[in-house]
Length: 232
Image 1 (cartoon, rainbow, N blue to C red):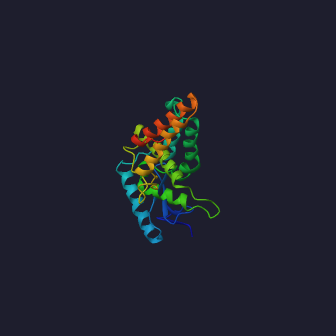
Image 2: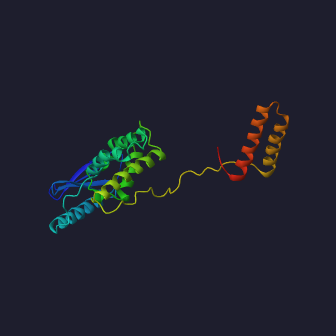
Image 3: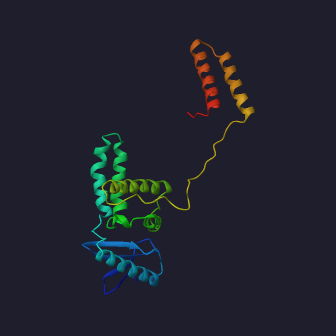
């Protein structure tokens, strides 16, 4: 079964579609609270959920819980102010891409989570849920997940500015710290010599002032690129 309850129905244990890890949830202090158990074992998930709930009850008793803002609150605040604060300096499509990622992917997953509960672990659960999509759908590319992480970080920065959390957690992707490395080809010294000698000869063979001028520009450009490392 995909859903279970413990502690007399006070805590629900479930799995998100496409994820093997169990989640737990409970309605406490006026709103739903959720957390990832970070395990695919139901028995361990129940132990985690019980400890998690009792910890929350203790924090509520000690006055440490004051109804924290959720990710959805921060996302709404970000969307309300981002376009106005950038004052047209961002491409309109870039702005809309942020909003689309929030509506389609980030809020459905993080929406009801309390902002302090979002950390590297919950973000990794999000990535896994995005990758483990239905068989008839194509998983998102590494670039797509990167852009979604950028948007997530922007929302969390908004939460920091509002004082809803103290800092932005580390949401970088583990294991793959860098993207694909592509080694670009370069000229050997002999090849470079052949190239600039050919463009020099081209100047001498050019007919007409305009053609000679263009040949000189080409020669100078090649010398400049080869000696400065610039790419055009």
